[in-house]
Length: 140
Image 1 (cartoon, helix red, strand yellow):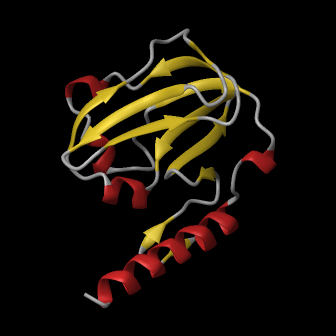
Image 2 (spheres, rainbow, N blue to C red):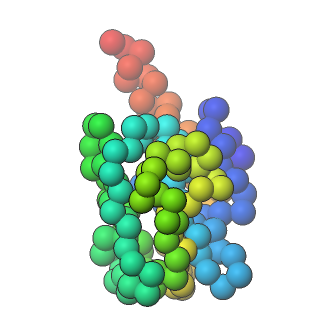
Image 3 (cartoon, one colour):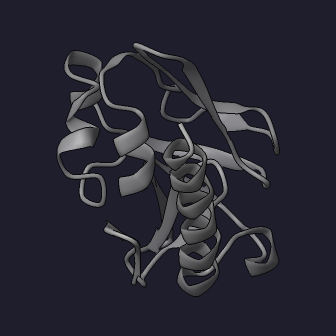
């Protein structure tokens, strides 16, 4: 599904902070949306957790620094990190090249669907966000 030119695959859940979650084989894969990576071009540093680390609800999971800002990813549920995308240590920018196949971490945890957005809700939410931004900049 698309919101303007940005793709949102239907096999994932989404959060308002430009994060996607994909349940797969008993794990949840966590990544950054195409829109999120577009806004985060130029990642210069990334802080990833260690495999085996327990992350409490709303605690820091991943932080990444761009030329413009530092972004933090938290989750609305408790999780345990099962795997980290090791390639990101050497080149955190690879998540910009293929945002739905490059991922940040894999976790184990349980969420309620009401805590996240399905693809339809995400496309609507992000579509409104993009529209507001474009209107704001059109006036300049």
